[in-house]
Image (cartoon, rainbow, N blue to C red; front, side, top):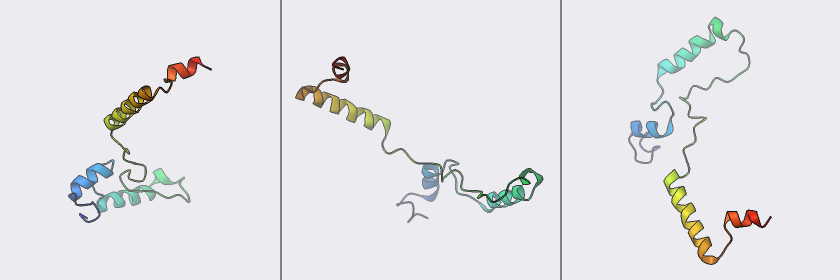
Length: 94
């Protein structure tokens, strides 16, 4: 697993990429099978049950919020130096 995790330990990789913060175990699949064979699932037909700890829905943030904030401030400062209108000035011109 460490090759897939880019040098991270497997547990650390799971905590960063899986919302349940752990690798799946056989019991997770077994419990899904028990559910599908129970009366609770008697109305489920032709569907895919994804048992992955939420990985299919999780997308890590592209950049840290602080990095984005710093970039935004630097861009604003740069635009003021060039003389581009601020957002307030642009709105008043409409």
